[in-house]
Structure formats: C-alpha cells, structure tokens
View 1 (cartoon, rainbow, N blue to C red):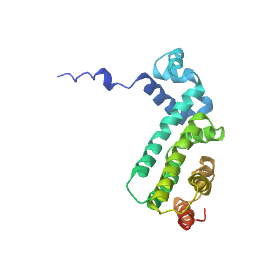
View 2: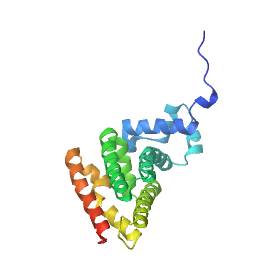
View 3: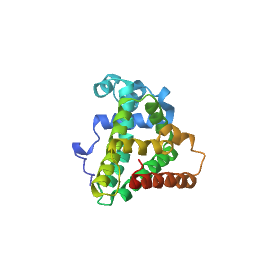
View 4: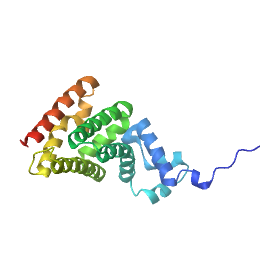
Length: 206
C-alpha cells in the first residue's frame, strides 16, 4: 500500500523553508558568504521569490535571528507567568536567561555570532528582543513591589539597575568573551550577583 500523501498544510510554508535554508547557510558559511541567491538556489526557487518574503538580505538575517530568539523569549515568559513569589521568580528568570545564552553560544556558535553582530548594531530585531525581556523583568519587579517583597520606589530605575548588574552575563558580546571560563564558574558568579541585587531590592537600597 502506498504511503498517504501529506496534506498541503503539513508542508512547511515558503517563508519557513527560506528561513530554514538561510539558517543552515549561516551555520555552514557564515554571514558574509550567505547570499539571497545561494539561499534561493538551495530552496529551489528564484531569488526574486525570496525577495517577495524578505525584501533584503538584512531582513532575511533579522528574521533568522528573531526565529532563533523566540524559544528563549518563550522560556522566560513561562517563568514570568509562574505563580511564584516575585523574588524567587526574578532569580529564576535571570539565571535562566544567562544560562540559555551560554548554552546557545556552545551549541550554535555561528548563529550566536549573527546575534552578536545584530546586537552591536542595535538592529530592530535586537531592540524588540531587549524590550520584551525588560518588560518581563519590570513586570516581576512590579509584582514584588505590590506584594511587599521589594521595598523600592521606582520600578523603572530598579529594572535598569538589575539589567546593568547582569550585563556581563547577558550581553552577547560579553558572553562570548567569557566562553573560556567554565559554566560552573560563571553560574557561581552570576548567583552571587543576582542574590546581591535581590537583597538590595528587599532592603530598599535600590
């Protein structure tokens, strides 16, 4: 008996296929050698068809970056939505954020390099990503203020100080610079920083 023919809905959409090929090319050839023409050829279509979905190489790279970041954002959103006390939740979110970036550097260094370049140039995809994470941090801080866990007056200033304190552990260029240090060492240092920030927020010194 012949295998059933997959329904049309089971096939990846054209833009998803283009993104899959582009991601593969970034991993194999790097950003400079990845071109719209080569991606189109590997996807079995004309480069004009790629441009229907992504108007430029930069737009295509940004779309790959956004797709690559989405699971991380989802992971952090799950933490932020948990019904835990704000201090526990904020600690888990910050540790998860830093840990996920380190893991992505180790498992997918080529696309991580693309993320570093986008971050350095502060491209729109990175600004949106940073805004989403800042929003999650600020939401937890506000929850902590509302429940009396945190004794702070300005949530926006406290959020900024939290993010500044985490700079070494979450800025992609800094994460890449620290790649020679063991994950255990970095986790120990991060834990010290996060708990110091939480103590300051509880004491009202931020």
